[in-house]
Length: 242
Image 1 (tube, rainbow, N blue to C red):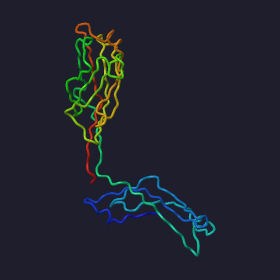
Image 2: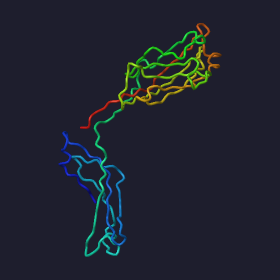
Image 3: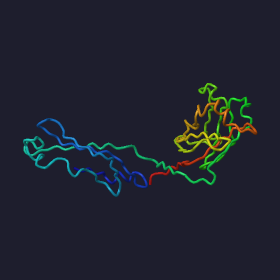
Image 4: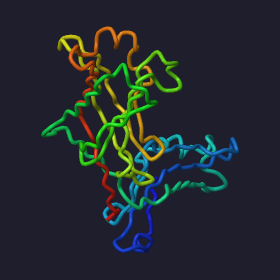
């Protein structure tokens, strides 16, 4: 059993469009007063090059042709049907490309006299990575969820760089608090999609402040050194269907 699209309906738009549809075929069984139903498992793509889709095998011919089975009735009548469930037309493709090669994949941020900081949060300088602008936001005494016992750090899209309503950017990166002795960095990995509703991502409990003050401030300037190393930043392009 096959179904064919009228090729004229593909010419409604210029250039000719494509139709994506699910196909469900029916063969009526009068003896049981119900339909034998078989559905193709894949959505079919109808276009100017392929106007016909269907199934090579629906029912064994001997089964279908035997009147005792109910598919042929009243002197040779039979009844067939098809449901064509059309998916909404695509208006564009969303294409993600992943940039994995950066000339300078690391951003470093030093916060001097960290223990004396008396602010709710600090924002780093704006830096560029993967064609987008970013900042790090750090809460020296933790954000509202961290109960003053944890360091909170977030990667955010810079205010000067906005995302489209349906745009998403994937980021894979390692965020580190550096050990002044250079041997025991605290590192967590980020694998996240940034979008309009989620333009900030990080950890409210990155590490305990007690451990930080004990081990991770350098002796010279009591500075906390933070490093962000990017592995992947995706770019999204939108191309019209042709």
